[in-house]
Image 1: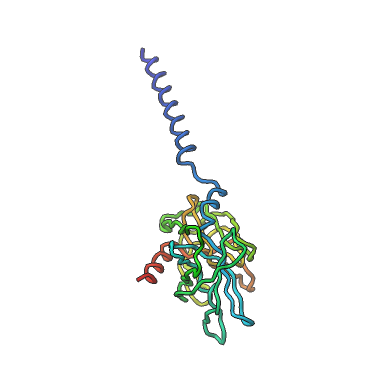
Image 2 (image 1 turned 120 degrees about the vertical axis):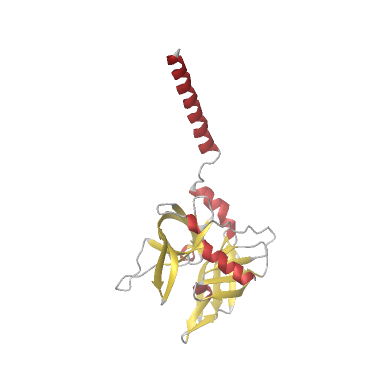
Length: 239
């Protein structure tokens, strides 16, 4: 009788494990990289900044509101002229599925934290999808992450990597900033792009790569502004 009870208990445990296995893989399964891209790409745009015959810049921005506000890096939307931070004359954005650019207006930027907000002038006929924010204070070393951005100005693309250090102070271009260090491939054009967790939530903005003692770019590591700093910036600008 005792043996029969043990067999029944083992059988019930196996059934429970099978049920939990199915729940995990069919209900709460972690999205694939392709699904993260598909769900996020309409919230991420190319950005182009122009001052005729003087300077041009390109990068990436994220939609943060349905009325067309977007967020990117300050260094994407300004340039240095005569040792002064200077705004470009014209700003344009383009969705991944579009051929033509739309005009945008620079609203505000913060040189210290390297963030800027713009607004799309001509809204598309389709509804805008604001990026979904995650909590950067909850990320851990080893977490899988994705970068979506306008790499080399070739259009919106995706790369994947892991969190190396969840929060580290890095001195870059004369400023010390709180950043996320990632084992991740980024290039010119990724500035202002989305750093997403495996649920497709924005946990940071890809911002810069460091250089070695010889002034050469250190490839394979990306430094990103944490999403909680970005949320504070948005709140400040919106007041």
